Structure formats: structure tokens, C-alpha cells
Length: 222
Image (cartoon, rainbow, N blue to C red):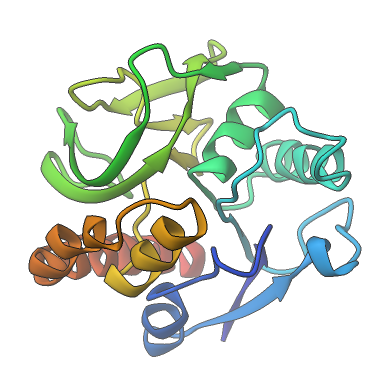
């Protein structure tokens, strides 16, 4: 069974539905929890890498002192051609590791149910308009020449990108369900009702997320 190394930054932003989808399609998940003191290795321990989201920023090394090690791990994955997905903060860390930049989003936060347009699909993302869960305040503002922008939203031009051949950054969440969104809202003293549109769109969200998970599994297994 293929093995995916997962970096999780906080207890409330775990694998979500990916914890069900990936094992069901032959991919074993092995999380590292640096916020609990787990060591982040210098290279990927497995066949692929997923870096999840978190409330900290991509440069918040004082808040999360493991972030330099995560950026180094992502750069190692890029250099070694290891299939990689960065989700939300993970996407921002991937961009910075590759030589891009991240800043506070000038158009304001994207919170809750949203849409991302992918003009031309690739191995991971199908072309079209995807329903997604958004929860970010910062945004990727530039990418290196080795990267290609794949998707955009109404507010932000870089919502999905690929660095090299097999490393993808997704500013949105493919793993989140309504319960996760409700937890994030409560943690940030927002209305739990932000989760209601996510619950109503759960079927379409799950279809999109599982399709991406299956495509990633196919990339890992060759």
C-alpha cells in the first residue's frame, strides 16, 4: 500500500474526509503532529506528502517554530519529485518554499462555501468550476517561474497552482465538512451558521474532494 506522509499543524485542521477517502483507494496515511512535539523530518517519509492548514501564517515561525522545517521538507519534496499537496496554509508554505510570496489578502478573507475556476485541467484538477470550502486571511501573491497557476476565485487570482510536475498548492479545503467548518467558526467567535451552506453543498463538495483524492492516489501509484 502506498504511504502518504501528512503534516498536521493543529488539532482542528486534520485530514477530515481524506482520512476515509485515501485508505479506501489504497493509500495509507501517516501523520506527523509538530504542534505536539513531533519532529518534522528533512525528507518525506513515504511515497507522497500532504501538508494541511492551520491558523498561523506561512512566516509565523515564532508562533509555530516547526514551520522552517516544514518549508524545508516541502522544498525537499519538490527537488525529489515526490507527489505533494499543500492545503490552505500548506499551499502558502509550498509557495514560499519554492520561492514565491504570501501576504495578507488585500480583498479580505474568504470564509465558508466558495467556488474556484480551473480553466484548463491537469493530472490533479479537472477543468471547470469547483465548489470548495474557503477559510483564509492570507493569500499567495507571487509564484516562481517553475510554477503554473491552475485556478482562481472571484477575489484571488492564485487559488490552485502546481510547482514542477507533481507538487500542488490548493488555497481551499478539499477535506473539510460542515462539522469542521462549524468548529472553526466557534473557535474564531463567528456564527456557527457559516457551516449551513457547506452542509447543503456537502454532496458536491465530497464529489469534488474525492475526485482529487483519487487522482492523487493514481499519481502516487503511477
